[in-house]
Amino acid sequence: MRPFSTAIAFAIGPILASLALCGAALAQPPYRLPVVATFSILADLARNVGGERIEVSALVGPNGDAHVYQPTPADGKSLGAARLILANGLGLEGWIDRLIKASGAEAPVIVATKGVSPREMEEKGHIGEDPHAWQSVANAKIYVGNVRDGLIAVDPEGAAGYRANAEAYLAKLDVLETEIAAAIAKIPPDRRKIITTHDAFGYFGAAYGVQFVAPQGVSTETEASARDVAKIIRQIKAEKIPAVFLENISDPRVGRRIAEESGAKIGGALFSDALSPPDGLAPTYIDMMRNNVRELCAALGK
Image (cartoon, rainbow, N blue to C red; front, top):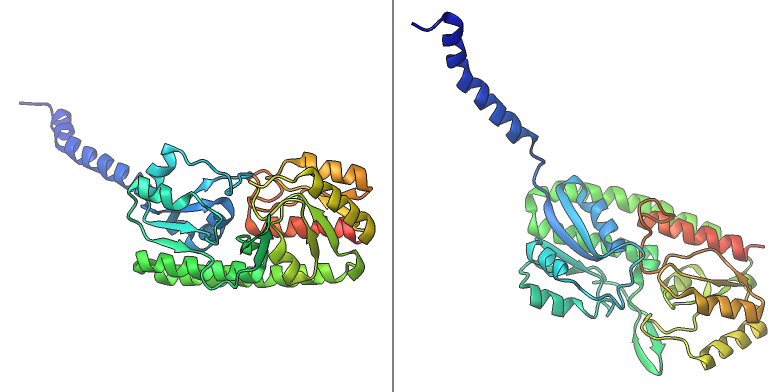
């Protein structure tokens, strides 16, 4: 006969093992809907709408340039596993359709700019659509609505949460829009003219009354020629444009040359097509817009 203590051990051993297995199962993180956004700004908007129910990845990360991005095999794998794909549209991601086809992805694609009134822009004699619609907060609100509807379509069980998250985030964007309008209103109208090294702020300028002049076209694939630079320098001097701004995705040498030869002040960094890393000045869309307005006011308000 086994000792009493040994018998107890044999009896409770399977129970303890079962409890351990249950504990391990409970320790597993909850399933999150895999969502892929084409670039960091769109990914941030999606996180605010999806909350803890989704897992968002961005193909083009912080300080990346979606215009000239070269997809990797890992991107195709991410798209293949996604339940929802978010794209900006308006020609920003010229590579996305080919990548989706090559990846065999079957997830629906939501175009975040659906419903936006696109601006026309001339580049090297050709008229095209300006893809940088997020630079207007009013357009960012349209993005949020499209993301919300896309998430509800693929995950109807989370509909109430997605709607609540979207409503809360839209309220934050309302506050942001009021802040921007109030800040720009303090800048004298005749000083609301700046040079940027990449033409990404047309929607911002139209929404808030700032004139942006860029030596490059809508795409960073288009480099400024010596003639372009000379023309910009003449324009700065003729119109007394007070500042030149550099962006986080552009080659700063063009902007520095223009500033040196024109006498215009170099302003702080503007974030145009991408957020900063998490420890930077613009890790979220709201941070990005506030940073840009702060830099504009510092350079133009004097």
